[in-house]
Length: 276
Image (cartoon, rainbow, N blue to C red; front, side, top):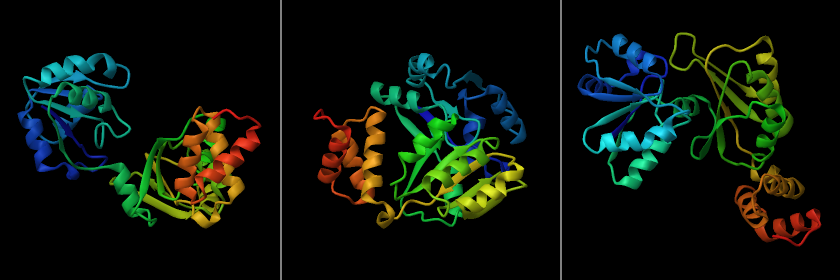
């Protein structure tokens, strides 16, 4: 079968006994970066030297069939560089191919930057959404944030330290300067830091630059604060990205509480067209 194994996101002490046993017994490992896996084996004192196969974003589609066939006859341990494979890391395509082929998939749970950041953020944890990395280009990033203006769940993003100041500025501009945010930096590492405040406050905090691996946790929008015209704008923004008007109205309705029918009709009128 395929075994998805979570690896430490910083502190090696977070490696579980199950992970170490799996590394000691593995005959073949599919790794995001084989050099990182070799360093992990050495750091954990694992003397086993399994066959290492590179599995990353650029070759997963081509290699999935080969690896699924291999996993049908022996266990295949799958590792990303840190955290859980498939979560903004390689592995999703492989798991989908395995499921389609009837090959078993199991998991060795462990460290997760998403859940760790959410837990320490001080923001609501009962409902949340993971949005991966924000787009690199400023216009695309602001467009992605506009599509999330009505999102009432807590939002978790990965971000590079170099783009964190610009992303915080866009969050303040698009979602509101008073939107609460937590910047979680270097989680589980020696210089771990969680900066909490409004988006405007954190723009100032980040102005001198940010170092290390970053996770942004952003407060969801209270339903009462999403005005109907803003909800219509969200529908039209989704339509511009290719979503059907009916589907966009239903999606925005679920996030804002406004009537799906009324959103549809208002958006249709603003578009000046009768096409769905």
